[in-house]
Image (cartoon, rainbow, N blue to C red):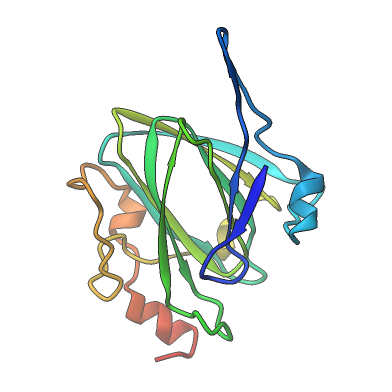
Length: 183
């Protein structure tokens, strides 16, 4: 597995090395020892989750307050445009956004450290996204920013077809800056 740090410190792209033959392929989707070599720690009580979305669906932008949460994200079926926004108050890349294509062809995983907003758009007819999260979900720590916030100006590649009611009502980037004492 190849591990590359991105332009935002702590965000890593992990690329498995699948073995293809006449049967199809086999790949190791996660190796804790390799992850630990790069400082990626998902804890012993990690939670695994999966979502299925239709083409054009946007999920996010979501994060956690408090100590946040780390997650390893991959697209097991189809393709998504995945985006992260750094909301760590003392980070030199605070407010910076990165985008990645995750799909079932290259098998790349995105390591999202605590202190990030995260979201994605399904690019294919259906897309299954798998998450390995370092701690159980606590709804009282949920934070979100609107997927179409003009200050973040995320250029979703497809027309947005569906968002949850929660995501449609999410606060703005400026509201988050105020709550973080950055406005």
